[in-house]
Image (cartoon, rainbow, N blue to C red; front, side, top):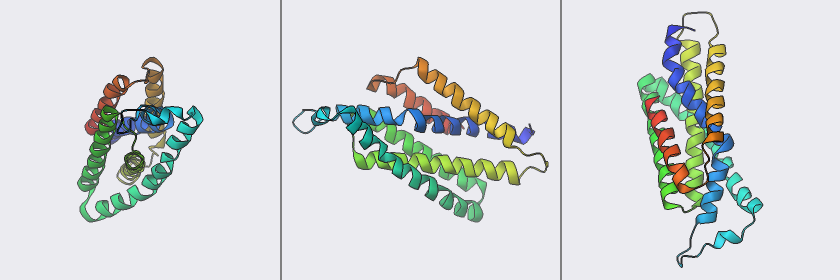
Length: 193
């Protein structure tokens, strides 16, 4: 592995975590919020919904995840072309912080808001594809070596997904208290990468 690829390792790990969350965490999180949402009278009207209906509502947020994946790299590309790598990293970091704050805030409030849920998923998609685009640009365009960096890239990313999903098997996410340290950890890894 090229020494410059070492700089991408934290980003690859965070991207792996992001992918694992999209695949395994957010449906359960949205269903938990839908179940715990109270109206102004203090009752929980969504408890009458079946689990399938709650999952269907949660699945609809993945439409905006796709929009974020399509839109994010476009803006990042413009920033990268006009202002360089530093601006694109600041853009990705800003989006990561905003999404982390939204997740923590929604967890603490325990109130499902369809607009906020979709905004969060849009941001996760945006960050995901921006990270992928940035990794592709750096690993493919900036290394003088003719060796393709894809093997190391996918090994590290897949390894991060495996470790992250294995830890989820040990760390159950069922309550607000369970999600709190998880999202704080997710945000810290995103910022540090």
